[in-house]
Length: 52
Image (cartoon, rainbow, N blue to C red; front, top):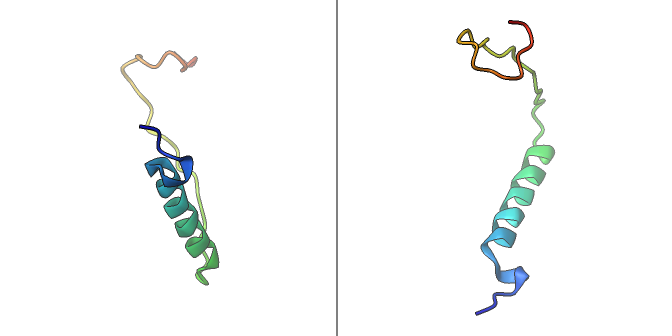
């Protein structure tokens, strides 16, 4: 049974995400994103950490 893309759950989820994004962008409050420093993995199991 083929479901049209317009009726798929992926399309429904995408439309909900887009709606929420529009709501957040239209919100009058001043939202700011910041980056936080990650906690260092001391176990040495991170293959991308070159500072061992």
